[in-house]
Length: 224
Ligand code: C5P
Image (cartoon, rainbow, N blue to C red; front, side, top):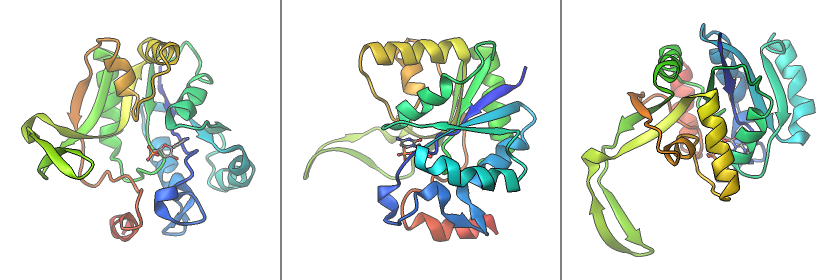
């Protein structure tokens, strides 16, 4: 059975300082989200994508999906206030018979097909897998303006998406988080809280998250 992808795209993108949220900014003539969806639609281990989106964006994005021939692959559903709400709203649309769910930021269009397949394969065998890259900068914990301590860089990684999970495990993670009103910035954290091990696979420096204005020239370069 193929995995179901959840691709949250309901962010407002305040950090980008543009009128359009970052997932709808054009890259080589099409919205960033289209690049991401094209990638997933070409992935042999993914059967369909559920895309949480702001209600006001759904009507305008549907014709774009149709033009791209992606209407059969991707389903648009309403997102929520926080990223976690959006992913959960997508998760509720997943067929409970699904074995593995893979979550990926709409704004990471440069993910490699092999990485998507690798996290999914690992989730089938161990239950949970994420991508991460080593941290090359020195990391310090601070207290507003002053250093509290220097963190051990060799024990820290920078986490990316896709992240893949066994359906039942992610369901339990969401349910526990909801019961405890806990919010995280990724889905792995919800599964970690259950005490379940999460396998870390090597991500890529080019799997960037297009978030800040400075990311756009880099994205233009990478698309070429
Ligand atoms: O805000 P953040 O950088 O974590 O966003 C990562 C992804 O989550 C983006 O693709 C964004 O559109 C999505 N998101 C969402 N719903 C929100 C906030 C963010 O789907 N309420």
